[in-house]
Length: 598
Image: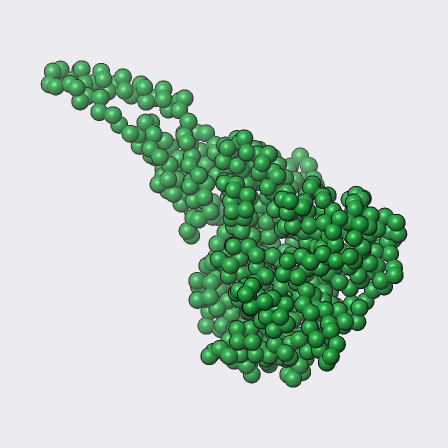
């Protein structure tokens, strides 16, 4: 075990984690030059297209150092705030972390939050300044920032470039010298932590685990502690570029197991694996349940596909443990799921993956957050409101509480004004302003989560020309004047377009939404009234006029009463059509709500 090192790479978005991982694999000849490509560990098309890492990826590297052979287990992690749950799971399986900082960008919000995650797990931190060969590299300034943040010596910081391979030897040496070997007893009862799982249509579910104590052999009878289920270990092995079978996986190692499980519910990330013959008494601690931030409904386009969509969601949840969902019904869209996501990017990725990996075309409703409502009858009883239909009747409503977050924004001093006005427009409060250096300022705001769900991140980037980084933590629930806004089409509510919104913004939002729907709804043969209502009060209205057929075309001359009679007959027909005709709402209309520009 003293020749094993488990480490992960953490950094802000785009600071070069995947590129550095590529160089490490290439340098140690883990991957032949024929198999080499950029972002080699990112196995989803989506990751390559967007140039981001969505999933953590584990791989084992063999490296010879001073004549001795070492086994290094590397986990490459995502950098975006929406995937921080992936990072926390990777950290639970490691003893050390490479903290990457881009030489031209310096320390950013995600660098700090990922660092704190690593320190909570007592990991050994190796600071690395990456991209030192770029023209805009500010090596002395970034060195000072890292020394201030971690409190290390300047000579402990490794200078590297993932692109050209500078400093790779120093990094490998630091991993072996500074990161402690895993602790654990190979003779003890088996105790392994599940940190990921994937679904394979031929082999069933493949579970990735880190062995803390004991040894797992092929054909052992094993037990998942949390679910209490028992299985036979058909195949165990280690994670090279492709999974490599072994006879056993020992304490300190990271590996995979195939037991032929077909049901997604039987595997829970964070569960402990042990053997039936000699079970461990301790389960692995320190794995928190994920807290979704943004909720949205996902519905199949045709109701017949509901069961198929459920299967796909369960398989996707295996691969992305931060997705949570439960069934729900909607008058407009039929059966579907209420899903919890960690943020808007996460929601977008899930939607894309459903379409690409499972061929599921879905309708997504307006994303919102969960509120707490209290009624006048039972002012102490908390009602959790996840979507507008669960909101109690306004006449019985006592108060509503909404979730607040603490947002940390790091930017250049010249953009402070733009960020202040953006956050204050979103009902935020400035808590602290702190200069990290002469060119970096950290702003701490408390903001309602509902305000940042839609387009806050995009606006922040455009207001600061991309020079702001953003990170947030949930705080608590606070009382707010939240109201439910309904959209009526000819007097009928469309529940999929309802929204929960702060009263001060409701009228403005209602006007924009009605105007947008007027553009998108197809013209019918009768007049359509689009109204936005708060309770019984209509706050905005647009009208789509009817398609007219010229019924008087066949009247040449003659008495005016003939024409009038035809027009009256048409008018009667339109009136009756309006009573029984229903308004078709196209998919674009549901999506338009998501893309309403302020």
